[in-house]
Length: 189
View 1 (tube, rainbow, N blue to C red):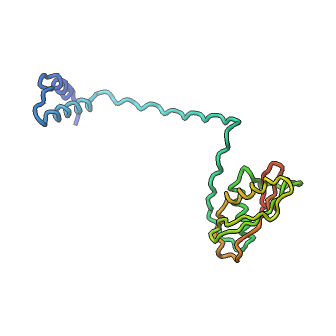
View 2 (cartoon, rainbow, N blue to C red):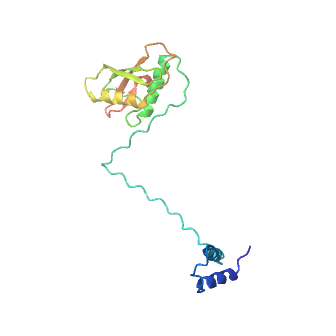
View 3 (cartoon, rainbow, N blue to C red):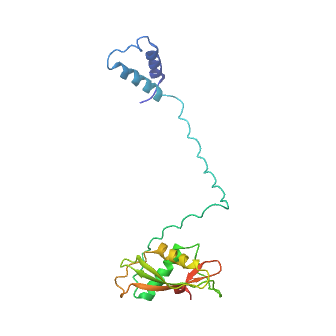
């Protein structure tokens, strides 16, 4: 169906007629509305182009007083089942590193170390942390113990341990450098 000038003039004439404002029953407003819609739909000019997309506003520059964003939650990547506690400890150390990227490192350990806390991590059957015991606190930089404990909790759960012999626990040594960044001893070559 092609639009012509006839519906426009008919709608204009109908709206301008003295009888247009008088209601002539339930169907008169429908006729008026139909005529106006028909006239509006038959315009000869193309619809206006959509406005150009705006470029996203640049992110504000970080200030010196901003707090760091919380570490993203570590999701358990599908991994093969550990055959023994040594393999399990290596998988757990890799998760701890992944969960604490800003507080850990994987490079070479340079002596002398700032602190070497030793933790015993006791697990539930699903690999969640049941308890963390401090086996050996460092003589200095005692705050590194809490940094290590927090890293363990951030990385948990470590994966099912029901196939491994009891007790479900392992020991991890945290090697802290002067920047208070650690490397688990299980990953030290």
